[in-house]
Amino acid sequence: MIDSPQVRIDPLGITLHPMNAAEVVNLIESANGASEPLWIANYNLHALYLYLTEPRFREAYRKAGIFLVDGWPILQLARIASGRRLDGDRRVGSSDWLDVLLRSGERRTVVSIGASPESARLAAERVGEDWPDVVWMGFDGFRLEPQSAMAAGLTWREAVRKADVVLVGRGMPTQEYWIAENIGGDEFAGKVVANVGGCIDYLSGAQDLAPRWTGRFGVEWLYRLMRSPRRLAFRYLVEPALLMVVAAKWIATGEGRRVAGAEEKRS
Image 1: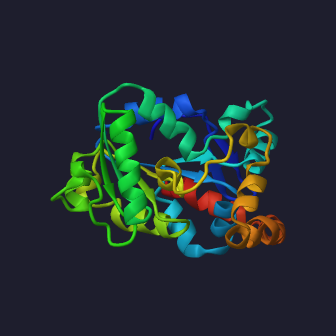
Image 2: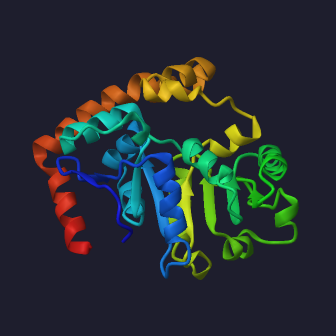
């Protein structure tokens, strides 16, 4: 296991790794070439809700090694549980650390799996123009067909064998289920894999990325809701209330501590 800051939330049965973007990139660089793949996952309120309500999602997340803090409420939870002052930059979204990774100037190969064919193609073109040191192999998230010149003639499995980092942006929880089903394959040995949500669409310009200051002040969700009210109304306005009820039941029944105990025995 990679050494990293760790905060255990035993009443909920989860572990968090509050890291800033630069630390995530350092982690990726140190993990490349290891004998086992490393899955960098994350927790926001939606992921926590799925973890507490969907056994399949819980089982998938057991295969992840790192759980980033992707959301202001989750950062507050980490602060309370750890009793430490965790800076706001330890709430880090996929776009935050990917930006640092692309700008590092290091030559690396990235395979992206996700978004529409058009968006996947545009993301690959932008990376080629802005960061020529990066070999970007783009595949769409529907039929997993190559959408970049670098990936031409390759299957996604062949591309993954050449990758340093694999980004999967197929929406939550589809992307997590896909990673869990495939990460055990030989082509993933020594790779860093991350579920990145809409990051590929942000990179291509298909969706607007919220100003990064909104995340530091805990209002990024409001920006996204205003941009996509129909798609996100339930997630941002209803699901948090349901999450409070579910979390209270987990704490009252001790389910989270049983899950945490089972994870300790497995590790």
